[in-house]
Image (cartoon, rainbow, N blue to C red; front, side):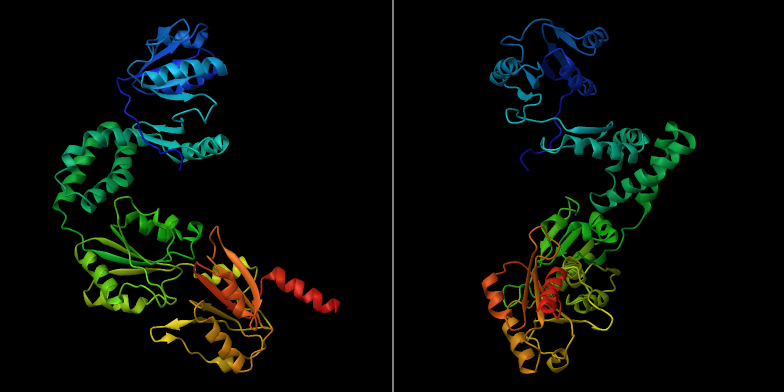
Length: 463
């Protein structure tokens, strides 16, 4: 992020703009929405700008800019549509302490003006760091359609009532009140009897929430999917949006954690095979304690919580304290990885079952029915199999598996840095060692990427 988005207080402050043509007018249409004191400095002033000055919306200085013109200005816009003049006036504004924006000159500007969806006092700012203004405008158009015009009215009325709501304790109690107002009582009152009915509706709602007993804590056991935020389920997104506490695994990506409320407590409870780990008992205790404190806890697990997620142990701890909970499934890595190599986990006349197995468990390398798995046309998705790859390879070969059986390694499934490596059982080692995979990986035994499989078939037929 090269530009940090903020909302700058400009009420009663100066904003100075140098320029009087089309570029100046485009900026002024936006700036006139603020409560700043606007000054336009230029020799040639467009008629529309003169009309705005006559209406008292801005002040005109009809000459070229001179030293002293930007004193005490919060913001300065250079919009002369002349590079040399923009450079000259920007130097003056810089020297006089204003933040400077040069229209259509991103590299020399100190700030950029985003596309804005205005539902005053609700404002949505959309920026692309100058990379894609067309995209910003498309997002703006979409939000304009989605956000009702009444949103600003409700926010303005709600702002006047905030002091009264301080009777409710900070945190979940207040959030529940405002959610009930903005998504229920407020719109209903406005639609039913108009703006005058909103304050009475707020007062009635506040009385109701004051009398309510504190809600008990709860736990959502949520699958975060394989890593791509777009593969997160809608139900999981809603849980993250409401969470007071998020307790997450090591494999949950930062992009997904960004979807949690900013005020939420984020706790890393990561585990690493044969490495550092938070004890499961400590994780259980964290979940239970925060829920008993009346908080909404999201236990966020990579993939699906029901697949190698030690879900039962956490449920047992939760149930022992009579805490309400729900399980929100996610896309497991095997499903996402199979899609990404263009394959199906099952196929008629090939395999009518698929094994989901782990490379290691609490005792070390995990043992399985290697004799059955070594039979032709078997498919297995091996989780946590990097460190146990040589062990798995040896067991399968020892039980008669074909050394030419395809094996596919997928690192960082579904993420931008996903890597797919196609090999065979015979070459699993040293392929894995040479690849030096650093991220989480899933291993497919019996599946090759569709493109690699097609190429191999073509070579066999040619031979």
